[in-house]
Image 1 (cartoon, rainbow, N blue to C red):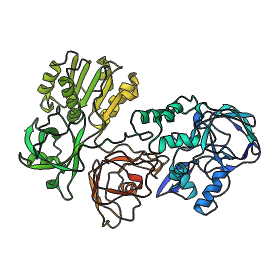
Image 2 (cartoon, helix red, strand yellow):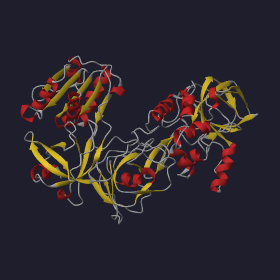
Image 3 (tube, rainbow, N blue to C red):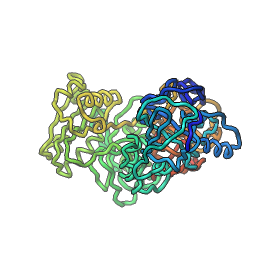
Image 4 (tube, one colour):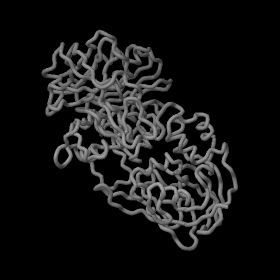
Length: 565
């Protein structure tokens, strides 16, 4: 008979970590007597990061004394008393390879249901002083699990644990954890897991992504095999002024072979050696329909920029530029619903490529072209767009000049655009934020609103409370002596230093916005496009990143690398 050995609670608190402050509830301590377990929490307990812990489906965390013994032997040390793994219930029995998702248990006066394994998170490693522990919990098949409260009631140490129902398909906690985090999952078992009503919505969504060929828990889709590795030279075929501030550049292969076909909306990354030392790296959207003879990008001049003055003022036909293959997830998708192509200024380029594809395909969908520029003289591609729209039988055009009328959510709402549409938005970040929020507020589903952002992506740093957005900069202290590391979105190149444990730590020291959760190569939250270069991993990730990608939390550069950060 399984037994509840200890009931542990703790309220979130601020904890120093790597020069930052983390707000976490992972510190739990045993309590005497009985406590009321409610739908969202045990009395006296709390969680710091509600995105990853807590809530109805993760009200109570369970860990086993057998796993305490296992880890004490593994690390050759005493890991502390009950609650050291952040668990609410320390139990004798209920092994992860025996408990099933959907099992129900009676403990004291309350009844519970198993919903998911523990989320792989750096905090348990922080709590125990073992940073690699999140990966080891998965690799050793000892994650622990969460319970949902079916019937509220009092529980206390010493209560017997009685299973009252076995979950359908008998998918164990250890098995379902491995299905998501380890390589080559059994898709039939994933389908069985999706048939379990008790499985938490987050894991349901992740498994659906796995079956669709995506990246599980990773918020950025796992990369696809790039058309070529690193950078290759492309010949400048033409340089064409579009307006006083925008210039189009046509890039042709140097070997006469057809160029690989990109998706409409993707971008090219250029390494422009003549513009600086080290060579600056910048990304520009493809702005035309695919032509195997030449790619077209369109560049807006920036008065104080490092790259655009060279591209617009010095670049001539016949020269070459080093170019990485087309990338990006801001791409036109197939379907039958209406399409909103919404842009501001130079943000027109990726949606213009989408419009080209729609016209080439004679797409029957309803297409709304909505664009704003400063005035008519700054309205690039106006004639080109009109010609393309004329080939589409269900196209509508709305142009706004900000000198007269700003395109705001209220103005957009007044157009009566269909809310069942797929919206593609590109422009300054504040413009995209305003328009996207306006569409969602008007009733459009958030997953149908897509935005392109060439600046650094928003950070995901769970629990860190004192992070402030700063302009990326070289790290403090003496420069490193290792290979050059370029953060392409941030426009920064710095030498590697062995004082950094990983590329993630180097990025953090430069205030380059980063995304991470486990920090040990499990969750893939940190997965980033690797534009060029080779890496070494330590520890080896449980599942390798997608082709052309890197897990920056556990990798170091072997030679010069360029990251899409």
